Image 1 (cartoon, rainbow, N blue to C red):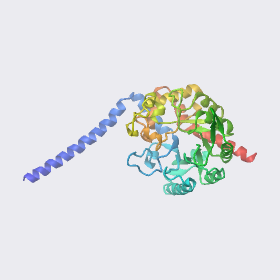
Image 2: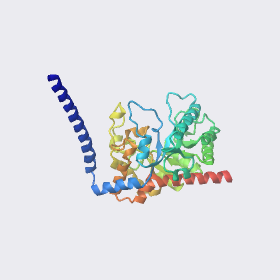
Image 3: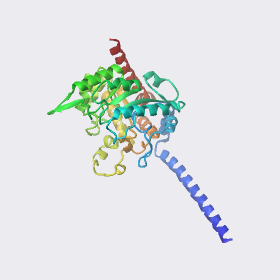
Image 4: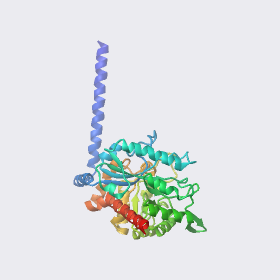
Length: 374
């Protein structure tokens, strides 16, 4: 009899724990919404459902699961959160840097096979028109490596282009010396100039995020096509060397370029930047607030206008240290909330989240066609 009673007690306790856990989850959901102005939050959620989203720089979608870092982007997250397009960099193992190009081509084949296996959810975008049409999430393939993408030769660019690569983050590394510094002066090398010219011709988007502002300026001036800084913020808000100077922003605008504001907390928040180097474990680093991220949007809108802004999360990279609430792509609606709160219109929000990147891509294609046909 005692054993039967004990079993009932255990069962009752289990049910109670389940109920409490469920109730807590529900309360957490509702208390989260109660932190905001209800009318503004409802408007933000409505806009989030009406507009589509483009993330112009990410690493996480095709990366294998990591026991330390939870996934920030999954196929289900893309479809559930109205993500129209994501610029997804081909994943890499930093320990394997002997023959990066060989491995890149092998990885591209694997990624294409994954995309082909689930065309209801995703498809490969090779042109701006591919982004504009279709009901699934379009994937623009990008490359970002710091140990040499080109083996010191521009010939490999056309192979990358044929395999579907449409955006490349440039940096010195391996046999690739794109720029040098002589004294206090930066210069593009002949290889760097030839590389930029060939990217322009092939219609590959040139990303200068991983370069000093002085070199960014040189590339913007040298490139016939508009250039992107896909994952950085405004130096006028946070004086991180990685962020973009006012001079570079002006040059970017004049040439029809684009900046993708990013989620790395140290480049978002001065408070977080001041804590740099104080934490051995990146997970212990302080996180910025979403409001601080939106401060960068405010600054750039006032400085250069709304037409040169987009979002580049860098999920799976430094975007792992995202502001609170932006830990996954599901948090994009929080940005919309603060934009609505600050008086941004639906049209302006749509420009930031989607339209500006498409128009930028079209400008790159236009210059490519002109160069090919000249």
